Image (cartoon, rainbow, N blue to C red; front, side, top):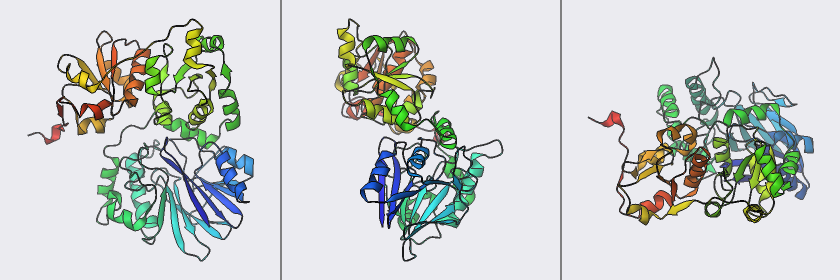
Length: 466
């Protein structure tokens, strides 16, 4: 028996490859099917099933392409409806993969069709669960992503409470938990950085599995403090239900080398310039109106959060040799309309007689000498800001920067920081595209600021004041 977790940090997502006696199954695959096919071919196995725990909202799964290429059956949980051929499993239905049995446990709550897959070994022992977004290590799935006119997040939270108590917590404590996500995902709010655990451990440490918790308490806890989902979530969920362009077609189109003149023509025709180099390289020189989102960070999540039109045509500025990686990571979140990259990069653009823009940066120590005389903008997430922040700053979370920029004055100068320096450059690129000109990046972000004498304070919730 082989059980392998394929974890992708950019999305904090876990896919799984299971194999026994020449047959294999893949659970929650990413968009690109080649890694799973290569694993099976290496072992002389045939992929029999592609199991989906639910309609994912945070990435486009590879189930359609993988099934097309291998002949595997796509399996969803009860109530699922798709525009392609799939097996809609019944609760407790069993599927054989070699000597193994994979049992469907319908665990609605995160979404109505959500399931947990129970792995039963050749001796009949229940050994592991693939819990998707129903149960994470340290948390449970958010219940606000599948709200319909007749279904509230409180309704879904109540379903999740029942699913956990009746389907999962009744299993043996030594069951291994293989969750769908780890820390960093927007599908929960308190996930562990660990990606494999046991049910017994979670019963002791996961707030949502407390034995003395009432349903009312559970509903309140899981629905409190949830940030609004990124705007691309419902678009990805729809693609996972209806199907999508062939991944190979997306890669072929997106990795076309564009001359400087062709690049400029595409931009003139409405293509978005997406610069995926490091923040340091971007700061040294970039094409006017570029959006910076570096491949060295949580690239796919920020693409999905900040590029509202999922049909947007995109032209890339990449490090040499990283063109395909950028297109793959765009496709993972449904941005399938990349039409090429700037051949020769910004050097070729400048050598053709075009000017580049640069960003001004200061160190945290330099900022310390100016505090009290300059305007500072903090673009970290609300939770980070509330934990600790510089006194008298303006908070404009990057997640909502398009709306929150109304707090700022385009005629003023702002020093912008995040936690480490990645998000602040993204924010500056967004603001510059919206007409802001006097923006200065704080190198090293809040991590560097904490090492100076700049005064910081904690957020105090008004309800705690007397």
